[in-house]
Length: 87
Image (cartoon, rainbow, N blue to C red; front, top):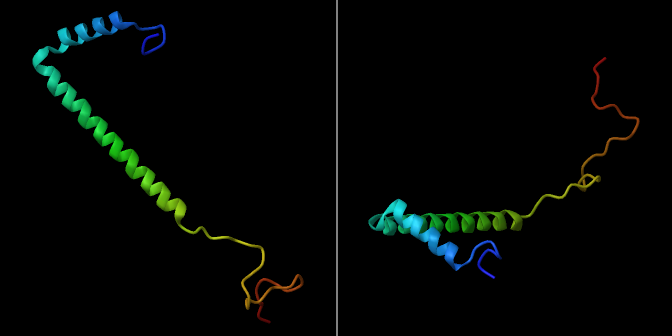
């Protein structure tokens, strides 16, 4: 079994490498490899930064809301109006 199951064998990969060599030329291959390496490095750094920000955000305390008001707060009764009207 090859890298991609039965889809590609060693000969397929050699043919693909030969086509890439013909398209880009031997002098451009090191620059292409360097560019791909830099892109991978940036991508990995972004993933690491995003994971750190997510972990930091998840570690922060989230407020918990309950139905009961805090101690010492006046509680409106069922018959009391929401606001006082002047007469």
